[in-house]
Image (cartoon, rainbow, N blue to C red; front, side, top):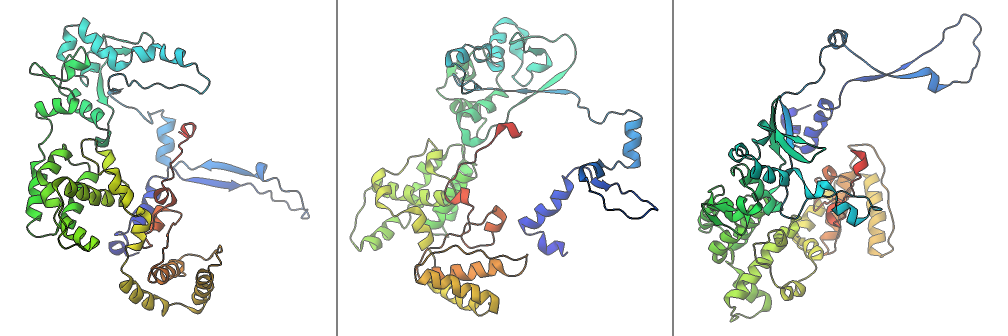
Length: 429
């Protein structure tokens, strides 16, 4: 295998990693009876004859014979949960009574709330952050409280939170700095001033950047690229969750992001003298950014501090799915189709003609193309898609896996294309 070439593909990288993480080798052993007598035909009982075994090499066998530890962990790591005010995690079944659930001790005395209560009792507790707390105190699950540690040693780790969550992420950041708070208001208090949000408190402590480097990047790019690429750059920043204050970047750069909006609107409405006020230009600019985000499975609604285009503008636009599929260069597709169709084999051409006949006559149908790898199935799908799209029609390429979707133009999995939710069965973990 040419690793320098194939490792550029995601599928090639995933393939060897399956073997790295697949675990110990296992073997299936068959027990066969040998007899010098005449061969007799007996009923084969596969359950009795086959054993599921695991091979242990010499060094692994000796390790177990001498009773050495197979796994150990030191020091003990205590996972520290946290939550926003009034948002304690509650787990209950479908048949549980809500009143009984809300009256559980785990709801009123969570580990996080008990930490703040402990800060009211012990003076030494006020000198520790939430992460440092397990080094001096131990959590008693039965009593739902913290107590002084008398022996042993432990370190704390706060649960990680994605920046897309919002306030919970900023609360996690500030918990690594604040010491001895007795309430949520104490956590938001910086130098005697209590802020309304945890994000504002993080800024007051200097824990978040002012995003000036992103503003400078947009201003610098404005000298060489068009407004479309600037809007794409801003959408990329949003998707990467690299902006601490996206609304601040928007207010400082919206004039650059709106470049070309008025011109495009004049062309679209065939009105050379069209005039738009500032709010209308902002709204159309946000709508263009929203289309880029929607194409990447995101939306401006995920960023609560950013404005959102009004409903009238959204309702007047075309269906997003149709707009995406119609936004192909038909001239280039016709050239691509001519190149692909001339390279079809006789067998591929037969399949192509049958499917295209059903499409052109609007007969519908379900077609199943079977064959092993590397026989040209993907090549056939590309030819069919180029043929139909070059005529201005719509093709939805929906493979069965994410890797397969990368091989087809505009390919998306069913969950991504139709926004089908993933149903996770917790019993499987």
